[in-house]
Picture 1 (tube, one colour):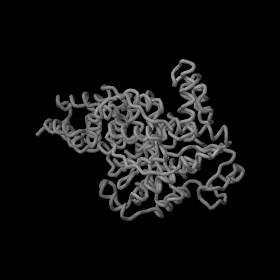
Picture 2 (tube, rainbow, N blue to C red; picture 1 turned 180 degrees about the vertical axis):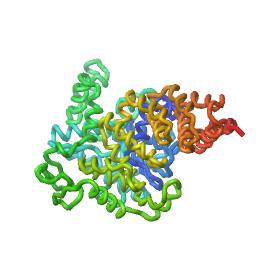
Picture 3 (tube, rainbow, N blue to C red; picture 1 turned 120 degrees about the horizontal axis):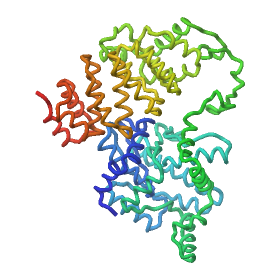
Picture 4 (cartoon, rainbow, N blue to C red; picture 1 turned 45 degrees about the vertical axis):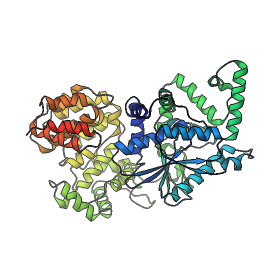
Length: 537
């Protein structure tokens, strides 16, 4: 077993790509951790939950959110060996666990029908109760990516329904409590690799039924003269095990099958679904089959809108969502925009509106054809609608038209179509074209794309030179150059720091880069101290 420091370093060094990044991506993408949270990190003693505990400790050290954690272990009736293993692992990993006792194993020991289901439900209830008693508002469970895709297939093949294990959900029985799954995007094989690399041994499911099966497996393995790991043929023939084997077989034919299963529940098109349920109500495709073109404007009554009617309706809706305090706050952030052109719709509300609007393609196309828009908020809405475009070429066409009318940094920066990140090879020529345009917000947007998509796996120092070679007197271009290099110092330090050491950047951008890097939580104190010495006075 490796020492604690090396185990911790392995998470953010050797396993940065496979474990740390998927963990932080899930935290950010699904908004799992917020300022002020107190989270009960629930530890069963297995590899998944113990790794999750260490990930939360790293998040406390390196993250941007202010939150508290409690490392909670429920002893539902472990035998002495398993209880001791949990305690010794926690001590070695420097995880300050709190243990409380329940009698769940006794309660389910005589249940013949679905004891695992009942055990899981009872465990969760006890964890919620204890977490609430400790003042927590969230419990974190260690379900990983493989658990998610297995659940999707199990629902389809054995229950006749499309559903998944959600990254977070509100408790129906404990008001104000949420369940989160921060390991949502981490592959099980990578968890196993981490444990083996660090020579760690964790308990498996430790209930009495599992102990009996494990005893049988070990006895049978001894009789056959093989290892316990080779005894898969006599493992429990559970439905989840069948699904796990099915996915393994499918992977041999298609190595992308796991990701495709996951994406299938991200890319559900309700227009091609015969029926779906929402809050227990079934919606059938025939319900709206004969309706008019624009259900977005009306209460189930078919209405047709075109041209100015659409624009007027959007402006009316946005004004109903306005927040005067937010308008004042935002006006100070973007002084180049006339305050009368700011309605004051908060970004989450505007994104929700865009999601609903985008469902009605003809209306959205009509709106997007009316450039430039009167209001700043309409421009941001337009950007959010472009994000819905899943075709790369038409998305680029939309961006070309849109950027022509962008007149502030906030609108420029808020538009982030996912399709661009999926077609990076095709994206570079457009980045080059925008950088060469001599137009402020085309250039700023191009540098932003290089910062967002080309500082990780697809990084090349050539891109860093592209940004350094941009010559502009525009403040918002220079700010984006500094932001790019500050981010590069956190992600590609060895290359980025040479641009400062060799003074390849204009003085203002050079010093602003150092300022932003020093303000960043992603750069350690020692590095910040060194960067301060590079400031040009």
